[in-house]
Image (cartoon, rainbow, N blue to C red; front, side):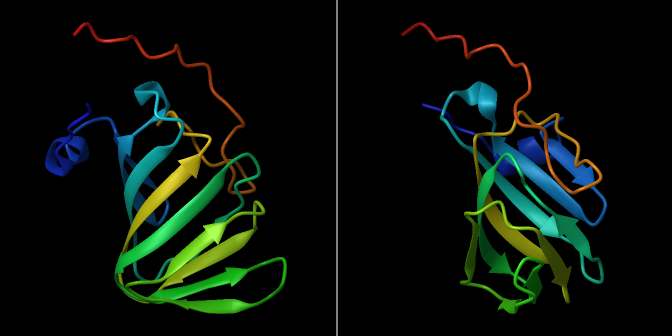
Length: 137
């Protein structure tokens, strides 16, 4: 069983900051779950372009408002609490928060926590991380 406290994660190296966002990575690849789970804040007034070529992501809006534009179709969708968007086809997109937006995100494959967005807004396919060490019972 894994138990984590959000305040502890936010005060650790699992709390990652980027241009226009901050993400508390509660589960990462080395936790051995097969996905990663993050609470991410997207900051008001930013324009965040992303294209996860190597990951699928689902995002649930907990707080805040804004829009997401699908750069493949040109369609723009409203974001507000209760909305889920899923980047199931490695969709190129832009998020434009009107207010700070708090999201719960799941990545598959899981991220390691060390990734940096490249020029296209993507993370690398996989980073070398040793397998999780089983805990003795």
